Image (cartoon, rainbow, N blue to C red; front, top):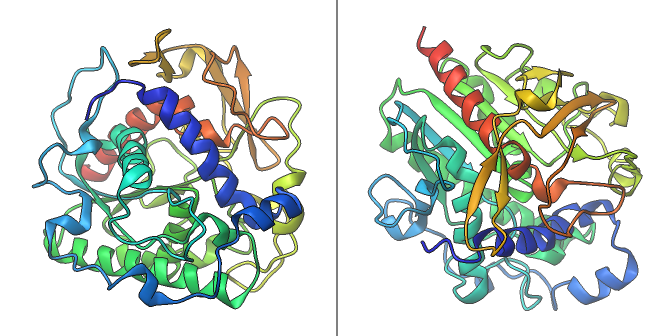
Length: 367
């Protein structure tokens, strides 16, 4: 895929996706609710028939697909010898229309274009550790996160059912003992947490790591149901990595005010103080890292046609469940969310660190 305007477009579109994903916490207010809620009631038929994951066209990325967007690399980053892991990546919301509660499998147009862009930017850190599988799925539309309603629940359930079916097809296609890496962001991370709650225990011997990014997980009321612990060491395997990026002064109340009123997967209460934070630079729970230890922030060029990695500029430390940015944050775009929330840039800020983390954990898994 051509890299022209890549970073500009991806950052702009991720802003819209982030707004949709975190609207479940109602930071957008009544105006957002009115303008983005899908018309009518949930109808599975409007999204079309379910995907056949035996077919290549049901996948955005798969080892046998030509022009695979997950193989993209920033300027100056050489392609690595591909490791032996199998990577399952779930993209975030890309369907912003309000004509239905779930996107069609092949939405085309802007939605199809931005879906490829998300696979290109967020799955690419893992293309050195193995072959990447990224399913198309009938994602819940932007507005499905705005209401606590039967329509919204059914839309999310339909999207998850596709993800689960894709994962089963993925497991059936790869060797039985092959190591697995899981990754997702926003809506993708929400579905990934649900997948782990159902399948985490059975994957324990094969799981290198799960990157559940940009969606809050409670260490007390969510993590015990996911079949894997938090990552506490950089060489630990079979564990979960999760973070939400903020700059100082951080104000997470817009996203956590409603979240803390919901029940966790265990049925217990969700408290902001219990949110899982694993620093992607150190690879450790509640870790702290100086700017010079960051292996690279994905930064757009001046003419916005390419992207490079800027090393050593941004550090981070965990503080009460948030990943707080340190150092000098480069110009990434004007799309920081309210409360100094860098959700839009969760992957871009740590692209190089994520790549190194995955390589380190795969090596540890092999030994």
